[in-house]
Image (cartoon, rainbow, N blue to C red):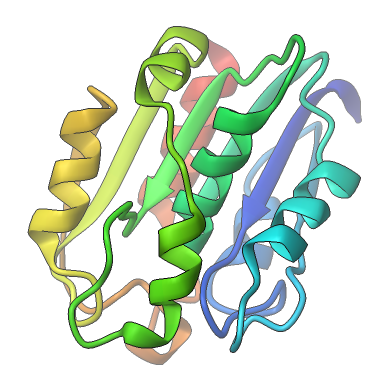
Amino acid sequence: MNMDKHLYIAHGYTANSKKHWFKWLTEQVDDIDSKILDFPNSSNPVLEDWNKTLLDEVDITSGNNVIVAHSLGVVTVLDYLSRFEGEWNVKGLVLVAGFYEKIPNLNKIDTYMDQTQVDFEKIIKQVPNIVSVIASNDRLVPRNLSERLAEKLQSEEVIVEHEGHFCDSDGYTEFPEVAEIVNDMFNK
């Protein structure tokens, strides 16, 4: 186990560490210390509590760190990195079905979204590899919102032919595209 390389996985709204393709992804990276975060109360998220989980569980002060985030986990991680004081080292971000603006028809997370602050310039400057993975037709997050985030971060965009939100309920218990991106980032 290479303790210098760390993979962190941040889930989204109503999810947890046991959902979707997260566990599968940790099995696709050899010799890398992997951690799937469990944010508290994911059906009624509080930004401060989710940020505390990142602060307690994620060590980005040294080593080669790659963070994979899904859905609401994306803006949460971006907010956390924007606020992080001091030196930090994140080699790559893989942002799956991400967004930084409010989602139409999902006003339960509007308050959460209002509290997030993303410093795009800081993240672009600090993170050399950013990839946005976007569904061709996401049923929860409109594709244009994920594309706008990708544009703001000047990230690479990977469009996956998929009618859904990359959830286990959509049949996503494995995610080879993300595994390949993560392994590439660690090998750069």
